Image 1: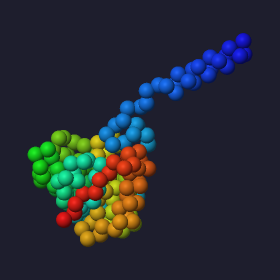
Image 2: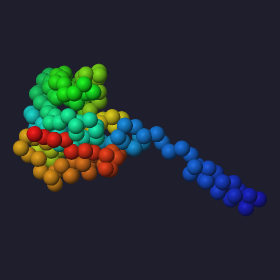
Image 3: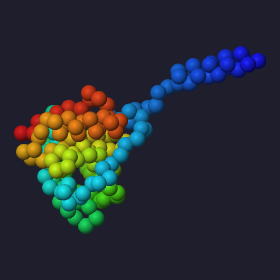
Image 4: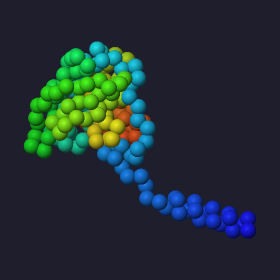
Length: 173
């Protein structure tokens, strides 16, 4: 009998290993952990940003893409250039702070949860994304595009479950 139990356990483990992998969500693999920047400072995040790299392939074709985050009650007023199927489009809307580094941004397709995953100490470069992996981007301040910080932001996105190798540089001029 003990040998039969071992065979049954082994068969169950083999079947479990053959189970379908968890579905991929956007540019993140599975529902793994993702964390926002706990020490996020909205006042330091405010200002102009450029998209240096993106997981959304069309962003690399449309660039340059910019964002302006202006302080507003409860969060920010965001104006940005977005790459849409019809080309570059400007959009403005509110971003309500929902937690440290977490916002609900009113976008062209409705509200979207956006998290700041990381910034360097001087808020020159940031990694932002959505928990569902719909997009992930590396933002830089105008004139502050340092390759080492862009690489660090990319690694933070990968650490948070984004696919290695799927991010593309976005022209900034």
